[in-house]
Structure formats: structure tokens, C-alpha cells
Length: 261
Image 1 (tube, one colour):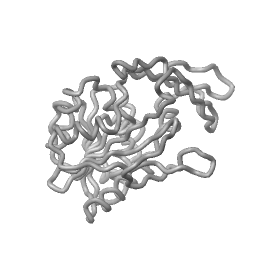
Image 2 (cartoon, helix red, strand yellow):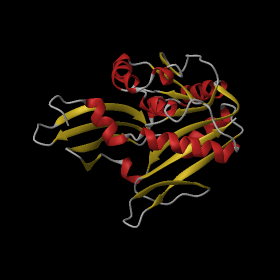
Image 3 (cartoon, helix red, strand yellow):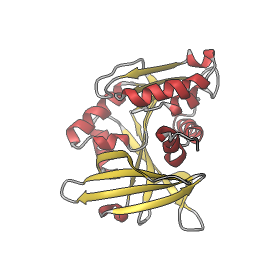
Image 4 (cartoon, helix red, strand yellow):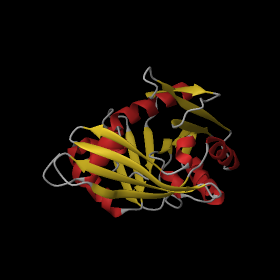
């Protein structure tokens, strides 16, 4: 923690692990395609920490990022891009734009993490986004999404996690079972300071795994697979994901869905 509260730094501390994410993406591509991926497109990239981590993997790695919000893009330029070498920055392309309409060169992988596509509330718009993601892929490309759910998220709740120098709160303000619409807030309480409420807020639709897989099929993906998080001895998520046909009846679960064009 520094004297000034850095909301993007604590966000990454609480919910992101770019170095782990790029290793996972690389591993999934190898398992699905049997070759080494080169080009990653990060949709809803925000501070594009993941895209920066991708180009750090080696000279053959290129990354693109798209986000509509200029604030996190500026932060990423000042704090993540600035830590790259000139050669690494040459392999990085970041664009301010709408993921529904932005066209870039084709990628081996497109990813949408941090449940960002939950901002789409209608099946039609979700399907349109998936169609665009499919068009953005090379012939052997894959599309990777993360997803979460479980009965705990069918009602208002607050989860708290202790991190180095602060506590992090993930609040679900409400849930409407007719529309599956929900609102989440992230609060942070720095050690020795005042709690920072609603640092980030999200107006989401809670999409289910079957809904997402059906929408992928409607968007032209030939198939999709699910990587389900295992359970550790303490009963919490293990952080390790394996391809599964059946999940577990957990109060809270996370998974990845991989679309194959």
C-alpha cells in the first residue's frame, strides 16, 4: 500500500493474476490444438495487465487489447506498458473501442476475463459479441471466457478476503431471478485507513454455463468445453482447472468455457 489509494493496484491484488492467467491460456491452447499460440487478443482489457504479461512470455508473443474506458487504459499505459522493454511494447497493440465493433488482425486466442461479458443483458447482444470473437480468430483459434455462479449468488451477500495491507469485500447488492440481473460492488479497507466503498460497481446479468454454450453454438462455434475448478482439502476452490463434463453442487463455483470454431 502507498500513501495514495491506487484503486487499480488493489483491484489487481484482489482479483487478478496476469502471470497465472497467461500460463493457463497457453496450457489450454496447447491441450486443445497441440501447438504453441502466438497472438492473444484481450477483450475488455482495462489496464491490459494480462496483455502485457503475454508479451513478456517471449519474443514470439504478440498481444492486442480492446476496452471502451479511457481511464484504465491510461493507467495501463503509465504503469504496465512502462515496465515493458521497447521490443516488448512493439509486440503490443492497445485500442480504445467497443468490443462489439472493433476490428483488429486475427488472433490465436481471444479472451474475455473478469466476467466482463456479463455486462451484456440480452441473448441477442451476447450472441453478436460471440460472433465477433469468432471472426477475430485464426482457423485454429480458441475463445476463452471465465464464468462464476452458484446458489449463494441467488441472493444478496458479502464475501470478505484478507490481503496484504487491506481487506477486500465483494458485495452482491441484489439479484432478480426473473431477469437474472444483479449488481455487485467492490469495497476495499486499507490497513490503518478508511474503508473505500463502491470503488468498482457492476450491473450484470448472471449467465449460466448452458446459456453461454448455447449462445456460442448459435454464434457459429462448432463446440465448446468447460474447465471446472477443483476443490481443495479446506473445501474452497483449488485454483486448478480441469476439463469436465459434470460439475459439482457448490454454493459458489468458477469455471472457464472454451469456444472452438
